[in-house]
Each structure stands twice: as C-alpha cells, then as structure tokens.
Amino acid sequence: MFFSDEINKSNDKEIKEIRDFLNKYDVIYDNPDKTFVIRDSGKIIATGSASGNILKYFFSDEEYQGQGTMSIIYNSLLNYLIESNIPSFFVFTTSCNKLIFESLGLTEVYSTDRVALFEGGFYNYSKWIKEVKSSIKDKEGKRGAMVVNCNPMTLGHKYVIEKALENVDELLVFVVEEDQSIFPFIDRFNILKNELSNNDKITLIKGGPYIISQGTFPTYFIKRKDEMLDIYTKLDGSIFADKIAKDLEIDIRFFGSEPTDVVTLAYNNSMKEILRSRGIEVKIFERKSLDDIVISASWVRKLIKEDRMEEAFGYLPNSTIEFLKSDKGSDVIKKIQGE
Image (cartoon, rainbow, N blue to C red; front, side):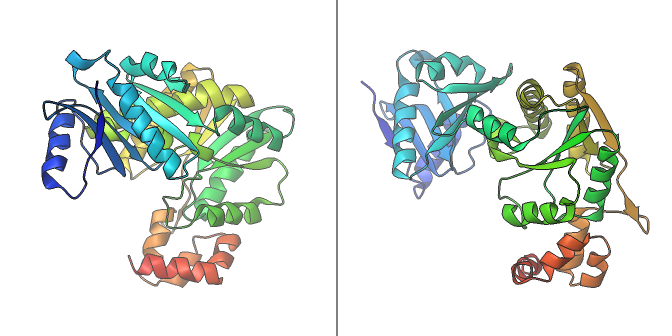
C-alpha cells in the first residue's frame, strides 16, 4: 500500500530529490504551489504538483505503473484544491496517462500526440462555450475572430481590428482573460469595450481558460524552448480549430504581423498551418507604424516607464488615454514606472 507525502518547499534536500526525479523525464521543476510524492524505501517513485488550478508533473517510474500511484497523487492534490477553495481545475499529463485520468472521471478537453488536457470541477468547456453562444447573434454571413491581449490597447490594435472588419460581416474579439499582464483584465476589456462600442459588427468575448492561458500552455514539462513552442501551438491551435471555431462557426481568424519577436512570429506561422489544415481561413495584416516605429503595447509601456507620457499618448486611442488619466490608470503607471 502506497501513501503520498508532501514536499517541504523549505527543505533543500527534498527539493533536490524532486528535481532529480523529474530530470529523468526531461522536466524542469518550477517550484509549484504544492507537490506530493510517493516513496518506496525512501526513494521517490511517483509525483504530481499543483500551480494555481493547474495539476501537472504526473510521472511514475515504469516498474510502479499500474499500481495506483497516479490515483493516490491525484486524490492528494484534489483534497488540496478543495481545502484551497479552488472549484475548477485542469490536468496536464502525457498522452500515455489518458486512460488513468478518464477512469478518475475527468473530462478530456483535447489531446495531441504529446499531451493530454483534462478538466474537472464545476466549470468546464461546455459551460463556457454555452455562455459565449448566448452572447453572440445568430450567424449571418462571414464570421471572423481574433485574439487580443491589449496590454494596453494601442492604435495598432485598433488598426488590425478595423482591417479585419473589412473582410467579415461579424467579428468576434476574444480578450485574453488571464491576469498575467500589467494592465488588469477588467481594465483591458473595458478599454476595448469603450473604444469599439459604436460598432455593432463587433462582439467582445472574455477569453476564459481556453484562449491562450496557463490552461493551454503546458510549459511545465517541456525542457527545450523550440519544443515548447511546437507543443503549445499544436494544442492551442487545435483547441481553437477543432472546438471553438467549430462550435462558433468561425470562418476566418486574423493576426497582426510580428516583425520583431521571433517567438510570436513562429507561433503565428504554426497557427496559420494548423487553422488552414482544418479549413479555416487565415489573414495576417501588416502592423501599423508611426514615424517608422511599429506600434506595439511593449513600446508604449517603455515610453510610460520612461515617463514620456505625451509620446505614449500618440500611439494610443482615446479610451486608453482616458483610462491612463484616471485614478486606476495612475496606479498602473506607478506600477510600470516602479518595475
């Protein structure tokens, strides 16, 4: 009979043990919130971890597979989520573990040849897509989509949205909901809402956990960056093409070109191949420039950090400028300048 033990994050010896164990599977341990292990004669034979509502690092030595080690680890992590009042969660695992997590009652979101994404708890893809469907009109004509973060919204974002509108009868704009940006999600969403409110061809949609989030980014078990990008885009692109676009009857997806960031450029190219292979049209627009400078949110943040506010305003639409002049905007400016 096996039992799970919690790794003591303050114990260097235990941290080295788990690092060495995961290293056998080409995995880099990134200090998650909680890690459980199973030992046999003092040696780690299986493990699993939680970072927020993402369960990951599910590995078991080959000689112990089929002996219930994954179930024991999973139940320990599930109890941790319940105690932490986390009602919904994702499980990332290798494809060879699919049957185990199906047997535990989890719902598969999507699987590729390399990774499997499951979800559990009270919120799931079916509920999310139902909410999205209820927020959009019945389809009439060509329906397009784009995904934006807008950290913050710039004239570049507005330009790409306006170019996309020239190609469709309706445009769904998914706003990345995960709060990993300097501008909080609710503010990013409201800036877009204020700026685009006079166009009834646009529907803004909260991206939820299925649009470029930690839920669809399995970096925790990918060691090499080139491999990370390939696995990420395949999962992200496939979820969008085979589930979201299919359920929402999306005909075309739009991107802005990426002249400087090689990672984003590779991501866009990979996404283009995946979407087109599923019969979804892809259009990439050249990014807007001003005074020979490509307009980007990162450039605007750089100007704000250097307290060059008037210059920054030259790259921004009115709604973003109004936000930055508000009390909440002032707090964001202080945060940027204090980085």
